Amino acid sequence: MVEWLTALGDVSSVRGNDVMLVFVELLANAIEASRSSDAVAYSFSSTPTELVVRVENPNPFGQSVEVHTMPDPTAEGGRGLALAQQLSDRVDIDRMGGLVSISAHFRRG
Image 1 (cartoon, rainbow, N blue to C red):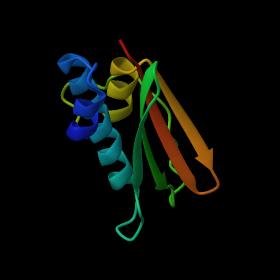
Image 2: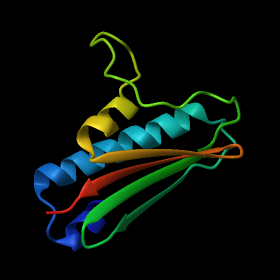
Image 3: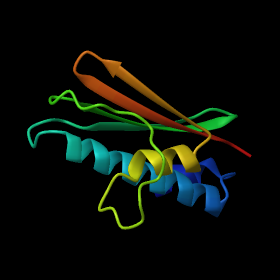
Image 4: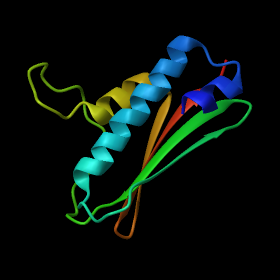
C-alpha cells in the first residue's frame, strides 16, 4: 500500500496515513468476522478525483454491518467502521449474497 500511495505522488502524508489506518482497520474487521478458512480480498484504486480502499469478506454468521459512532474509549474493539467513517469522505457497505464489501472513499487534492 505504501508503494501505491507513493506512486500516486499527490497524496499528502496526513491523508496517506488516514488511508493506511482505514485499510488496516477494515482488514482487521474482515479477518475477525470471517472463519479461518475464508478468503478476505482487498483492493486499492484511484481516479483523478479520489482514492478507494475496498475490503471484502464472507459473512458466514450473518453479522450486522453498520457504521456506528465511536465506542467508549475503554472498549476493546468496535472502532474500525467508526474510524473509517470519520477519516474518509464516504463509506459504502454492500451485501451481496454471503459477502460483505466495504469501500472507503477519499477525495484527492
